[in-house]
Length: 306
Image 1: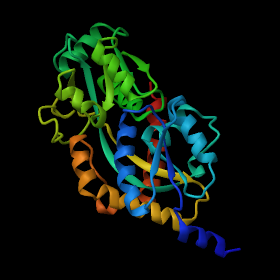
Image 2: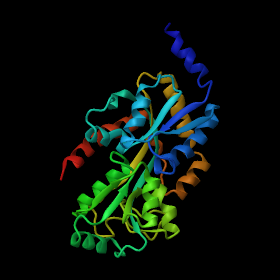
Image 3: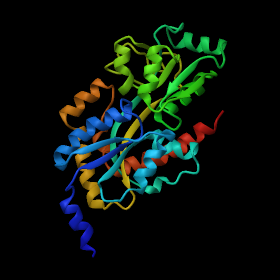
Image 4: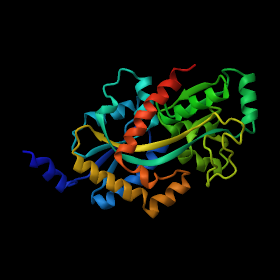
């Protein structure tokens, strides 16, 4: 019987794999998932089907992923929100960090605050002054409580010391659509999903929570340059499998993910998305597990501060 898992791994994968994305189509995690999955499918020799499962800041999707058969045919993409902060936001979840086996990090992302194009403030300094003069009246959209975009909002609001209303959506794309349409004042979003709208002047970005400017948005000041160095919003996306997935299968998925993010196709797409692939030293599953452990503690502290 001990030979059964090895035999399974040797024939894996023999059918398509499902990758669960915890948000609506068009958001950061969805875009990254589709780009990576397409290239992972090449070395695996099987299609990876993207399935968007929305609700409860990603916990609906991860509940399903945690309960899936641990055979490598159901995996999920997560981020600091869905895979770390969620344990503080939703303390009675039917899963824990130990319910998953890390496959590997696939992307590093950068948080941006962008406003509707006709918002009165033209830069970060003016926005903070406006928000302080109008407490509770400014509203910023995000991809739902527990999402990485929600964490961008929380980090920004606390760093800026402003009282704004945070509006949750069922994904980054609908929040951005409302900002473009003027239904909300702005969004907290990842460069991966908002950079095109910024380039097209559909919204105006006021800051990126990074210590370096983004190559795709060279005119957008970093938080330090804009006068708010306390605002830090560098995130990640990683792949996870249900606990109990055989190590040999995790190794195959990790190798496929690494090949994907090192491919010219993904590198070019990531550049367009203002997203960065992991360094060579960051591909191992253990690195992603360390990020989860670190961020569970980090966001527990952040989310309990007033």
